[in-house]
Structure formats: C-alpha cells, structure tokens
Length: 448
Image (cartoon, rainbow, N blue to C red):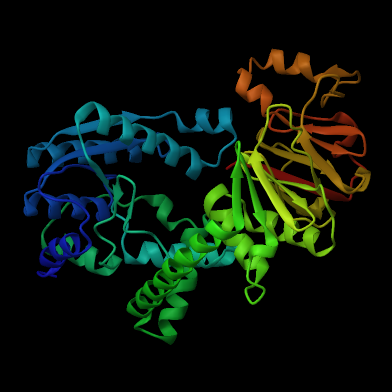
C-alpha cells in the first residue's frame, strides 16, 4: 500500500479534478475513508481545510468522532470547521429520511463554507466499493442505465479523489501508516439497504469470483462510457424533437426515429432534464400506447401531459392540484416533491400502531380504490384521528404554522371523496385501524 499515495496523485492528475492553485474543503467524518483521504492530501501538499458534521444521531459516538477530527486537523495544522445539526428535528419538520436530511444539511453547509472561506472544491471520500454498492442499490430499486454508472468522479464543485481505491486498500494504508479513525456502529446495522448489500450480497458474490471488485469497476467504467455515448445521442434527438415556447417544452414523438425505442428515448429525455422517475415515465408511456390524451404526470417541479403524438412539459403552477391516481397494489406514487410508499400486511405483522408523522396506517378493507393524491384546496375537510367532528384543512394548516410554500405543497390522500390523510400531519379517524381490522395499509412519505 506504499503506492496508494502515488496512485492518489496520479488519479487526480489524470482526471484533472483540481490543481495546486485550488483551495480544497475536505469532508471528514472520522471514519477510515475520510481520515486516509485527509492524510493523502496533507502528504501531497495541497491547500486544504477540514469540515466535520455532527448529526447528533449516535450520542457519545458522534461527539467522539467530532473530537478526533478536531484533534487530527490541529496536528496537521489545517483549518478546521465543525457544525452540529439537530437532524431528528429536521426530519420531523420536512418528512425526509435520515439520509436525505443529513445530505441536504451537510452539502448546504459545505457550499456556504466555500463562499465564506474561499474554497474552490469539496472533496468527498467515496471509494470504489461505495460506487459498486450504489450500482446494486439502484439496480434493486429500478433504474435506467445512468443509475448503473456508480458514483461520478466529479459533479459541480464536488470531487471524489478516492474512487480508484478499494475499501481494503484504504484500511491497509491506515493500519500501515498508523492513521487514527473511528468505526461508525451504524455501518454494522442491516437496517439500511447499503449495509445489506455490503455485508450480505457482496461477500456472497466475492465467494464466487474473488476478483469481483476490479471486475465490477471495469463494468461500471464500460457502462459509464455507454451512458456518455447515449447522452450525446439523446442531446441530438432533443434538438430535433423538442421545441421550446414561453417556458413550455413540447416533445414531438414523430420526430423520434421509428427504429429507436420511443419509451427509452422518452425516459432519457424526461429523467435527465426534468427529473421524472421511471415509474412515472412508464405510466406516461402506457397512456400514449392507449391513446389517452390530457393525463398529467408529475416530477418534483415539472408536469408532463400526454397529448396524442406529443408530450408537453411545463413547470407546475401554484394552482395545479397535482392529482395522481394510486391503483390497488401500487408500491409507490410520486406527486410534486413527495413520494409515498405503500405496503399492505396482515394486522398480526404490524409491530406497532404508534408511527411517526411521515407514516400512516389504515384499515385496508375500508378503502375505496384507486386512491387519489393531490394538493389540498379551500373547502377541504376531514375528521382528525381521535375526534368525532369535522375540521377544515385551512384551520389545521394555520394551527401547524406552516410557511406559505409548505401550505402550497401540502398534499392530501383520498379514498373516494374522503380525505384519509393530510400527508405528514394527521390521519382521518374514520379509516383508523381498530379491533376489527384484519389488513393494514401502511404508507410512508419521503421528500424527493
């Protein structure tokens, strides 16, 4: 592992990630990957600063990570920045998962540091095994080719100078050079999909092929090259098939070569430029196949409308209800900036009826399918859980002290004409799980 330093510097030069003129902000958690990255940067002589986030999720462990990073940064004589976040409160406020909330918080702070302290790039310690795990995560969740290209070397100001190295190489370097690091106990938990892949799937595959890691790295490189080629071809199609007029983009399907897969081209056009998800694009393509016009499909900020031989894409307007249907058996539904995950199970398998605000449980046999998901509107009412009388949604939103933006994006889930869930806030008492319930519909909402 003596050669890791030389390979590190060679990788940076080959991919032109940054130069000696740059000031680099290193994101250091205290784990072995980022602590080795810090040591490599110091040895290479780059101008660096160290940023550490304490998400206050692991009690004393989080504090000990913070202390280690501060101590080592002082030993190296490099600028050190630390920030503590109330991550759980932020999750409760926004409805985001822990991973999404932590990611948003840390990158917003890193970008702030770049502006205030004059850093030109943000270095993250992702390595080859992280990229392989990302490949499998996206594969299992359903993805296009772009999702199988692993982690990119550079995106905007963020650079990843350790993607050439494996987890094993990094650990061996830390041991050989007596680099202190902390082990995050959550890395051993199989609650997270990444850990299930890291601890369960990958070791099994490596038993079949001991050269699994370098083989996968080459596969990902080939897929990345294929995606780059496809991306260039899609941009040519975009210039031919997409017109722009006063903020409205129109995809003219007859301009797409008949020898190409129309659905694949639409996926590439809609996912890359507007952020539409695969499930939504699949539903749009089915509507086109069935000759259905006027149906609307939503991404975070965009809406696509099927219109005979065209797809019209525009920004979501404030007055748009963003209404989508949720058929029985659907696993998830996208609406604006939210995704809802659905799971039906027997009451005996439900561990607890006490769930956080971003989850809801309903008596599945009381529901009328398809469900409908939309933004709230004036005049909406429901029967809050634990109450017997009606309550106007406008009054509930005032009680919750939501911002104007949060009010505009507030979603409701309906069964028939009844609002069963003011999403992320309150469920309706009429559809509650009770002593006669046999099947339970569990719904979990995340912000995307």
